Amino acid sequence: MPNLNFTFHHASLIIADTATSVMFYCDILGLQQTDRPDLGFPGVWLQLGGQQIHLLKLKNYDPIIGRPEHSGHDRHIALSVPKLSSVKEVLDKRGIAYTLSSSGRKALFCRDPDGNALEIFQLIK
Image 1 (cartoon, rainbow, N blue to C red):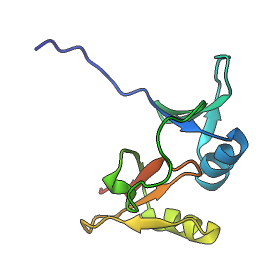
Image 2: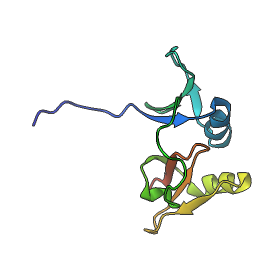
Image 3: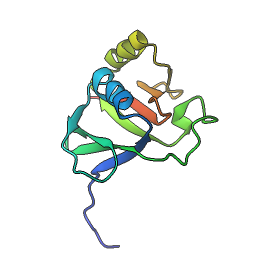
Image 4: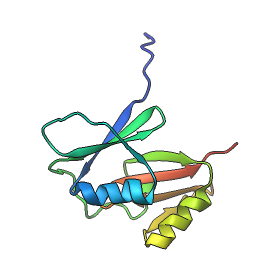
């Protein structure tokens, strides 16, 4: 097997409204926007260390309704934080629903305004 030395660069999520997504990801979760080239359609790129999340305002072919209530049972991206209780406080204050990991580890699962699933877990040190 060849060793091609892949590293993870970004994940892309489909969004319906750029301003709503920026409010969720930047104003609520505290992620930072980074430069994005003109790709011929609206969107936002978010920087997380050496990786990015690309929010693309394009037609969404995936169903938004009928997804599992616990988004850990759905395709999702995972973000780590030093202190999960801080995230829970922010989500509770904003009335954003989430479920806790059924494994007992310090992790929660929520959805963005477009139904994209996020796992947020506390790094164990």
